[in-house]
Image 1: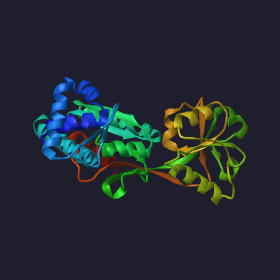
Image 2: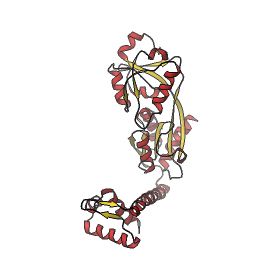
Image 3: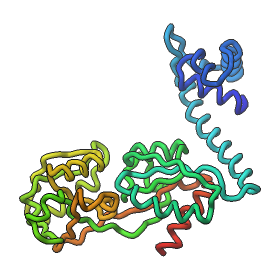
Image 4: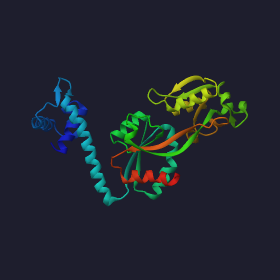
Amino acid sequence: MDMRQMKYFLAIAREGQVTRAAKQLNMEQPPLSRQLKLMEEELGVRLFDRTPKRLNLTEAGELLRQRAEILLAQFDETIKEVKEIEEGVRGVLSLGSVVSCISLLPHRIQLFRETYPQVTFKILEGDHIYLGELLQKRVIELVVARLPFEAITHIDHCEVLSLPSDPYVAVIPSSWTSQIGKKTVQMKELAHFPFLTLKTDKTTRMHEQVMNECKRHGFQPNIICECSSVAIIMSLVASGIGATIFPKSVISSYPVSVVQMLDIEDADFQSEVGIVWLKDHYLSKSAQRFIDSFRERFI
């Protein structure tokens, strides 16, 4: 069974039909059906259970799918590595970022491209779980995220470069500024605000940090909305719905005419940030240099 046949098999496994897989592979159905028959004859097992509407993987087929994805990823990485020996630092660098870390990227990318103009970027956004899955599948090479990285990928399987910690600040509607009359706030004052908090079903670290700090100061915030989107929370704050506590870097993308940032006088809790990548996997030269650009800047 060669690499070409593995690609055929994975296409059929993804599509669940030979017809759709053939279309995705830009080939005719009969040759693809013959290749599937040859694979099953060579291996001596059924790879799919046939039903009128769909092909479902057998236990043997599922094992082959898992192994084939790993082998093809390693094969693609090897080809990329060989090419890079001659081509140098160029190509597409695919990375992921949680929304609350997006503001850390523009300046860094600008500086990076001044040194490596042949590198372009593909950036995907999502929560830790989604980005962890993309990392495991090698869709992306790096993730910029709040730490700890709450992904399916066990942290022992990852390398992490910690970046400078990010202090938490209170964020209120600009329309409230005249009522408060100052640029700082104490934690106990936040007990009186309608409160918005960032929380998803699977990633809760930031929410827990904020709740623990409120508890440490003797109150439970008046939460009127839990939301999984930084952008939505900031929109609600800007509309005067309530206040929130976010890492300071998040606020840099929003004008003071919309929201107001207040330093917290009596709290010094921080959000940890880092770059995450898989151990024991090939990293493109562009990914290595991008990591180095942070390391040289902050260490």
